[in-house]
Each structure stands twice: as C-alpha cells, then as structure tokens.
Amino acid sequence: MTPEALIRYARANPGRTVEAVVRGSLGQTFRVRLRWEEGGVRFYIPAWRTYLDPKSEPLAREVMEAWRVLEARLVEGEDEPARTP
Image (cartoon, rainbow, N blue to C red; front, top):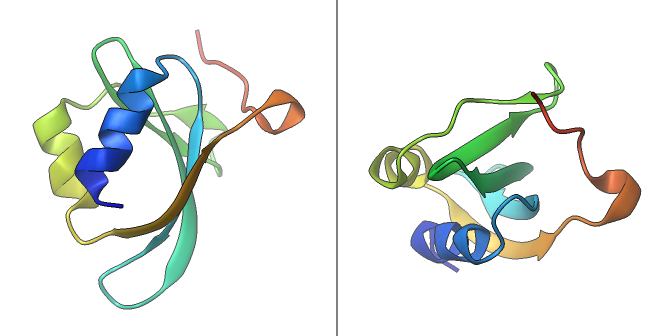
C-alpha cells in the first residue's frame, strides 16, 4: 500500500483512527496512528497522548514519502486514543 492509499483510507473513514505498520527509509518497522479530521491528516504522538494539528494532504504525503505501508486497519474500542478537544 502506498502512503497515498493510506491517506485515502483515512479520508474514507473520517474521525476514525487508522493504525498502520510501516517500514521507514532505514528499514525499521514501526506502527503509526493517524486520522482524517478537519480537512487534513492528524498524526498521533503516543508520548504526548495527543494528535498533531491537521496536516494538508500534500504535507502529509511529504512526511510519509519514505514509508512502505505493510498493513493498515481501523482501530476499534479500547485501542482508540482519546480525542483531543
């Protein structure tokens, strides 16, 4: 899956968290959470337990450019991070 496809998946499910397993440019594998809200992609920062302000689609694509998305799913129930006001 491409980063563009991941953004389309999030846009098709607005307000819901998408968790993806991605491989970065250095070959490391990690999990990311994002959601489509307020007309942009919001990335979840676990250390802060919050979402960043919405990023425009071109900026989000730039951030995700080096990612290879291995899998993506909607987060349900207790795994869903709290919404920020």
